[in-house]
Image (cartoon, rainbow, N blue to C red; front, side, top):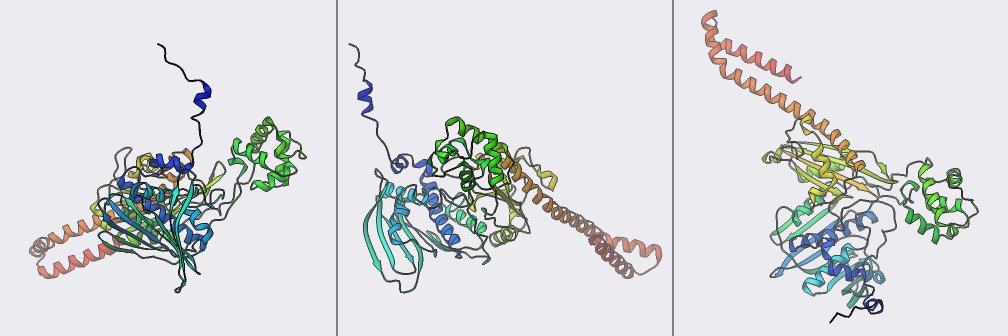
Length: 517
């Protein structure tokens, strides 16, 4: 007997909406919670990034305390405390207990996190693996607020279990988050200590105190100088996509097209707005909300064709050559350091900049292959190294030109550490885990130019070091044979051997000074 088929009416009964929290509950690997080792690192990363970002935005030198302690088999207590501005009581549970809730998503400026997912994801992972509540403590300098909470994944809403308020006798301000999670702790490689070390390098104005399972480590700040705070900019016409332009027009309450263009986009004045509208064959008196589909297509095409000034680059917060060197010297015992900060450039209307730091020799002499540190908006990228534009750019460069050995298409050989920082208002990550940058040709080109600038500076040092070594070898060889030469010359000339040795040694010193000059 034939099976009865379901009709559309029956099938439609199974259709229902799911919340973003419920989606990530079943797909936590998308946020970086792929295994217990990486999950521990991801929790620390999200909490520390959030703390440093808050301190920077408030203009406060970050003091971050990180604690990791085992509680039972494969379970760890994680606590991160900062000295930031804190969060007001009525927003505290929403800021950490609701996915896609934040202040940065619609702001076009450089930031570590923008989506309002990171800390909520860490709390959800804790809830999934141990069933424990998250403990949040906050103060803006007045009362101290403590609350225990979970996330209601079906509604994507925080569920407050308990709240406590107490007087702030010491005037503390900041955020403290305590979670218990399932994890696997490691000390080397892609680990929490390595992540904190790289964070300390790229944020040399931050002090990080780490209390781990194996003891305490302090990453002192190397400077009190903080980079400039990035400023928010409006979208640039050359970077807006058709679908976004359509939504902006449909929801606009502007009464004419010129006002719409000038108010919603940067680098558009009255003259350029008139050019765009003329090219698109749209009358200025038309309301943006009344545009037809073809009008929006024509408007989008004309926006790309009209010549406009590139967007402002003060929406970026580069570290700068001086701070890059300070960060490297603080944590890396090298012999020579190089730093390069390229001027910002624009890709599809979105500003970005590349910075490079090199450390050579010293303790790195024990390594045969170069080490690569990748950063996006000052955050270390610890995983998916092979899928990243930064890795592609480093490997594609001919490092032999700069005095290093290299097999084709591989990392250079030698005692070298390479730091590459990609700063942008929009980082094209390859996945939600935000561990690798997409290999756009424009991005790779800019990274290679920065590496070439740094490589040329490094070559000067390597060449000089090689030359001095050759001089030293020649001198050592000459010094070794001075007694024999002096004895032969003494027999031939009748001069005393000691006098000849003294003369040859004096000649050698003059040669040494001359060659060094």
